[in-house]
Length: 249
Image 1 (tube, one colour):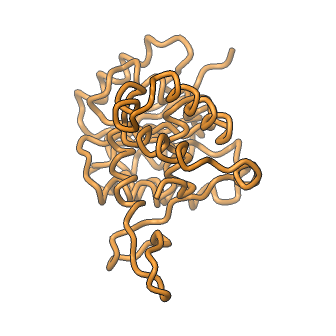
Image 2 (tube, helix red, strand yellow):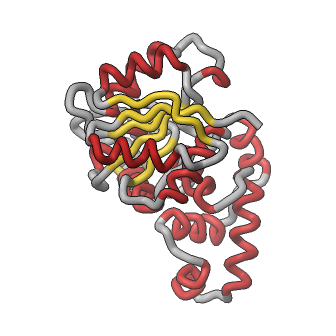
């Protein structure tokens, strides 16, 4: 089995050295390079073509958001399977930074204080083409995605979330065409949408049961149905798809 080739871009020396050392102990991950700033990191990502770039959002020269944007421009003509996937590391759950990272084209998002096991899970999921997002960050995006403004008819509608400084919102990718077609054929029920919103908010099955006044068994049934309809394998992937497609409002 081929290893997941990783480049780490992190300006804090101790954090970078520690992460490199820890990841070298993981059998299916190979750290092919590490850089202490954005410019060196971008050149390393360009020359080494790793599977996953782990990028600190708070780099001193060009930050992780701009680095991701430049990487995406460089890879604009590459086949999807040949593009380096980006896992953003964030120290703080700052709303503007998280939303800007979404807009820049990052694939996954993890808090820097996550455990090594969680980071490894995020790397593996990202390399496989699945978006991985920390539940705390998911709540930030949910809050922004639910922002509404009056429509010309006076009804409240979700913002089109185009990048607009006045509205402080960013674009969130919609669901893939085949998934959207499936949702059109088998839409989520009103109750499933309620469960999905609570999943995105980080609630457990027991907490959802209490909030919706249903049994845990009923919640599990709804969760299974949601995963099937969204074509995802777990709750985290369901939350990401819900946020990017605007399902939760």
